[in-house]
Length: 422
Image (cartoon, rainbow, N blue to C red):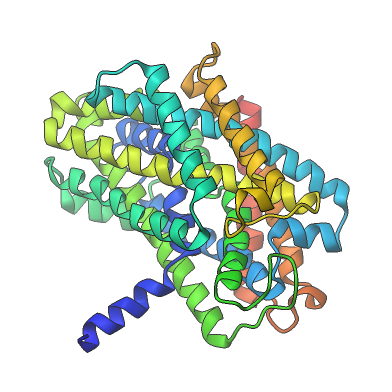
């Protein structure tokens, strides 16, 4: 093995929970939101892709560090050290929000596949659901995490699609670096939607628990929530690198989705996008069959990544809150409650698609719940990660606290404005 190959292998081994969290943030409902902003505002909101990176990174790094240091997920730490009433309230909102989001994502995936394979929507919806549940329940954590990591390659379809259409790259560069501000209500709501979509509560729980899954996998602790983890300074540095790469990757994908929509839908005056499938279908006459197919592949890849993360995050949170055995490293027979919650949330997600609720309404409802939950959870995360009894010498730096408090203020303002407009 050459030195370059060896270094690349070590680098890819570092990538894990942070990369998966970043990719899962760009789920099909988020794709619809980013496509809508690009179609409506052109390149003008490109700067938000850079603006949100440090905030996303600092919160996700705190969550990952909590998991690595304590050997418990976020829900388990709050249950042990803080009020359980607060925890139960947060977990309930998370489960409701995640279930609605799962429903919207499954519907978007089935509708996207239907554009390519003309089979009945209910059949595609049920098939995709069974496939995703089978992966979650029957694959070991080692295999499952590797599958999710490789699935991030599907997101490059969005990047390739952007290069298949005519772009004004000079304007893209300028609008990515120079912020555009407007007092227009539509602009303000678009910024709120981007903030609410990028700072996702389910990823807080997911990444903290996945760091613990990694510790179990590498024999640093016996089981999730049991024992004091054995980790090194290198492990913490790898966590930070993994998280940084994940958040940067997430926002690069966001940027390319937006500029694709701006150069196609926006340029032709198609400013209303209801779902990710609508976006893919609208691309076909404007950008050609190949661009349409690539964008559809991107939607499928993002759904296959996000739905398990959404279901898993809720399952981790509830299992730890109630003291159940949890973890993807356990077999189904060892963690009935954990896999039961995952299955239940996913099946309810299917049923949502057969209600009169429109996909765009599902997205709005999920965004509203996230808007309520995110600031509350961020405050809890900052409190936990500054508690020396919990974190020892691995508490927050001053920069982490400043950025954490700043994004908390922004999210509270976003929450208030979003709820007022709803």
